[in-house]
Length: 304
Image 1 (tube, rainbow, N blue to C red):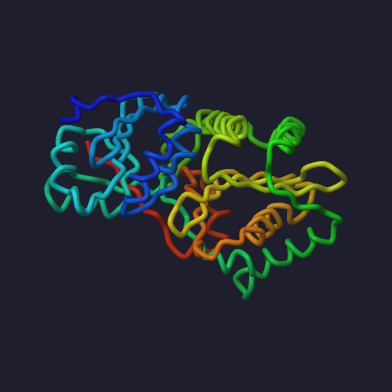
Image 2: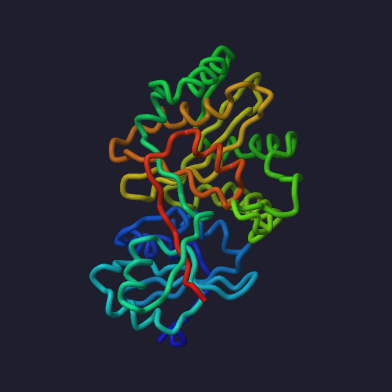
């Protein structure tokens, strides 16, 4: 059945239609927000195909792979099985769908630990209370001794973000050619990930007024940006932090942008924060664990 689908380029004009399918998806992953797939569409040559029940996403670079389908897996499982039985290369599969595929002998799956998304308590990240956040709170307190100004991102601020990026080169990773996983496997090109981050940030900023559910904030000191973040409010109860950059010359800048940005979101429906995956970078994994996640969006892939 998959060969009968009409795949097309991902476009802005169908973002709200896509969001209806995404809203019905049992496990909402940061990978599958419209903001994320729109930002990455050119890097991975992403396409989508709509059916009455699901949206299928196909990645054509660096090789053809399929992402997990978007829609109500639980109530349309028979239809879903008919589509997936002919696909052998499926990645970024949330745990509940992966277990369904394996338990029903549709596909064998294996864990993709590098793609797990980190979930945090909104309350904990905004209060930084208790011993486990003692160091974070101290760094935050050191930062706020500066005379700073927080602003929400709008089109008047975007040029300042580009200047910030150019000045301190925050998005480039010049350390190693590959990202090493816990097994020392060189599965993910570090340069490709860096390029994806750079390009995605540019896309999100360039289309700021056209992308729904996008939000962000910046911190200024002496009329210059020292930290910024871009986030996504399209999930049911979770804020997705897609991008967070800060000037390390200002001690506590990362802790400050995290807390101050969240403090300025006044929407009681959000109780969780998704800070995305570590892509197998052990340094990034350590940093994400230091914020004390309360859970993960576990991901799997089809075992070939």
